Image (cartoon, rainbow, N blue to C red; front, side):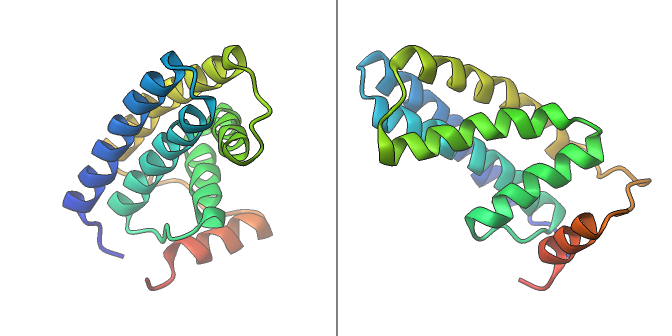
Length: 147
């Protein structure tokens, strides 16, 4: 699959804008919007990696696949854990069950994740990654099939 660097940059820029908006909303104690913008920052950053690599990224399940794929390729399960906190922010958009201090902690995890994803986006994929498990093979098929 062919990457689209211009589209990748668009998603990366949107990610940066979203995390700034998340901070603004948190300062104003708008927990619902702070949560959603934190989730969006992570999702857009993952889409930027996917676009750079030519992977499918249209849908929530594929966003999770991208996070897992990047974590597997990098040997970094902590990236999935950070993304899990972004997912909790997304749930909070609907449920509004997190306090501001918890949202701030989760947003800090997203802020740690974003530069890692930017680094991954800028580097070529590792040449030695080969799907080994059935889950990895299925995920790889979902990510690389024709868009």
